[in-house]
Each structure stands twice: as C-alpha cells, then as structure tokens.
Amino acid sequence: MKVSRIHTAIGSDIGNKRRNNQDNGLAALGVYVVCDGMGGGVGGERASGLAVKHLAALASKPARDRADIEATLQAAQDDTLELGDELGGVAGTTATGLVSPRIPSDDAEADGRLDPALWYVINVGDSRTYHLDRRPDGISVADSICQVTTDHSQRQEAIDSGLMLPEVANATIPRNIITQCVGSPDGIDPDFFAVDPVGRFVVCSDGLHSLVEEHEIGEICEANPDPQDTVTALITAALDAGGDDNVTVIVVDIDADEAQAGQSAETANPAMGSPKEPWHASKLDRGEDLGTISDITLDGLRT
Image (cartoon, one colour):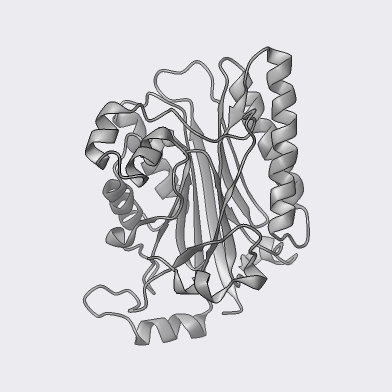
C-alpha cells in the first residue's frame, strides 16, 4: 500500500458532572492522541495540556521513530513531574492514539494523501484506541471492533494475572485506579503497537468507554460513516449514559487507494462486505521498532 486518504474528526465535552475539562487531544499531521488529565482542579487540565504540547512538537517532525516518540513522552513526563511538585501533589495524564512514522506531504492537508506503511499505536494509562474494518463503500463493520490497547489499571492487571474473572474485577475494583500515567513518580513504560493503518480508528478517554459498551461503539461507528458525525454520536451516547466524566473522542478513517480498494472488493466476503484477511496489530517488544520487527512479533499478531 502506497497511497491512502485520511479523514479525521475530534470532539470533547466537559460532561454532566465535572466543573472543568481535564481532557486534551491532538489530531494533526499524522498524530492522533487523546490525553486524559488527573490531579484535581486545574492540575489535570495542565498535565494533559503539557503532553499535547510535546506531541504537537512531535507532529512537526518530518519523520518520527519509536525513539522520537519515547523522547516526547519522557519530556512530557519530566514537565508533569515538575507540575506535580509545583502543585504539591501528583499531576498526571494518560496518552493514547495513532502516530504515523512520517509527516504527511504538503498536499496531504488538501487531499488527505500519504503513504501509511505501518503506523504506531501508543498507550500510557487507561484511555483507549480501537480499530474497525471498513467496507469498500466506507461503512465501518460494527462486529469487527478491536481494542488495540490494554489498560494500565489495577482492574486489568487482576484480569490478566488470572486472579479475577472480568465480571468480578469490574464489580470490585474501581475503574479509575490506574498503574501508569505520564507524571507518575514511578516513571512510565509506554506500550507500542505496530498496526496496519487502513480502517477506522477510535481514540477516546475513559469518559466514553466506561459508559458505552464496546459493541455499542461499534454500532455507532457503523451507523455513522462520516467521522464528525461519529464523534458527535459517541459523545452524545456517553452523555446520555450519565456523562459522569469528561469525554474526548478522535475518529481517524484511512482508506487504501482506488486500485487496492478494488482488490479488497474482489476478495470481500459477500455476506459481510469486508475483506477476508483479518486486521492485525502487534505489540512491539522493548527496543523493537517498525523497521526491525522480529519474526516472533510478526508470528504473534493478534486480531
């Protein structure tokens, strides 16, 4: 794949019960990341704002590899630690989303074209990045929804370790006890995933996924082909479900060029209207980058 078209939308809402919006997001130049701040009062808003400031500097780079992203997150970590010291506590923020290894060319701002190759999905904390397949006609496939990231939370650790079944962990461990955030005195260990960028990505704070079930997110995506309509509908669903937190959503649609779209159509499942080959994401090991993916990592691709 050498040419794609990208269409994006971003939206945020303070919610029904909060006094200020501690979420921030960036959707520009191949960097699509949501940051959900914490720290009380303006501390969370400032923390997420610091992360977005550094991510915006990353977005201005013509090319960025894993080392660049790690350095960006570490700079945000250092600044947020200083913010915590200033406020006399701990300020922090999540950070998750989709990052292209190259900035789009100048004309991409006009027509959305770029060479996607493999992209990164990054994650620190419990905001989430999802993926859905899209049919050749541009409709997302609801039941193809896949949570790419894994929450850095006590609840998820209890599930992953086998100590608790998901339903027990969900009922007994508060969702907002996270084990990593940018600004943590214990440092950060971001997750990196290598992903095929074609399809629809939904990047969101927990103000969405804590209130709207995954299958509902998929159904809303299928019902709304336009990214901005999808963002609006997802935020509305979170507010209708209680809106007890800030909610921020980015939708990124990336399409193959017409020739490849035609090839996909030829291999599509007539009943589903989606390609037979499943979409894949692969978690990168420490020190592993898009250009040095090992055979073991490739063999470990998960749907």
